[in-house]
Length: 226
Image 1: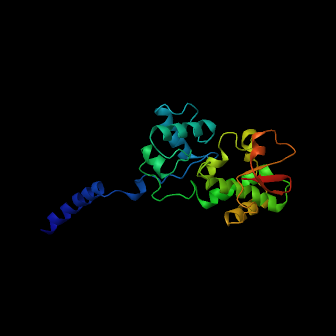
Image 2 (image 1 turned 180 degrees about the vertical axis):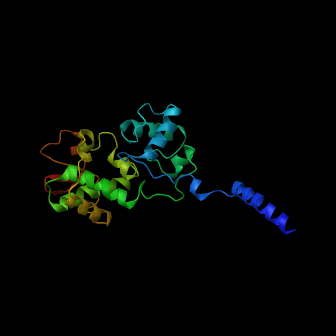
Image 3 (image 1 turned 90 degrees about the horizontal axis):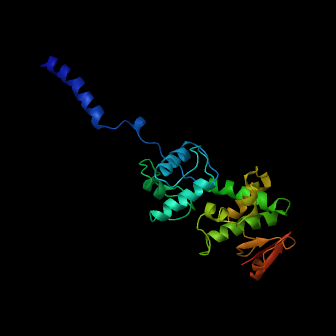
């Protein structure tokens, strides 16, 4: 009897190894992707999108303009939220079982929001008084709450022709420490603009349309409007 038991134990262990998944072999949890991020998760999404005809760029692990357009097209075609972000919903549509289990705030984590905000503040408001830098960050956050604009921070920042720093590439420069502090203050609720969703420099603005917006205040070289 004891000999039979010893013979059965290896077979039982082999059976359990088949039916019980090995945690180490589980699919990795995918991170939320947005314009500017890099890494293996971006490559995974690029491979899927390229195989399905949405993406025609290189599988280089860089979330750039081609990747952004491909994601928008994929989301629109599949009835998803069209925000250019690869979060749980889009990962699931891409067939990734390792998609994040939880949701995400404004399309990314708060630390991601802080970093992206700081890049915009540094590029758009470098040299402005500190209150003016906070004001620029507040405008972006105000747009997320306005139905006329995308509801995610990345969507607001990378909306076509929305910000000159995105068009000329200065948004990718390393932000200043002051820009990070200003972005954090805006995320914490400070809005020196009183609810503005536009800002521009009156000395350089060339769009006649922008002057049709009701100006709320001026801080430094920027005016802020609804």
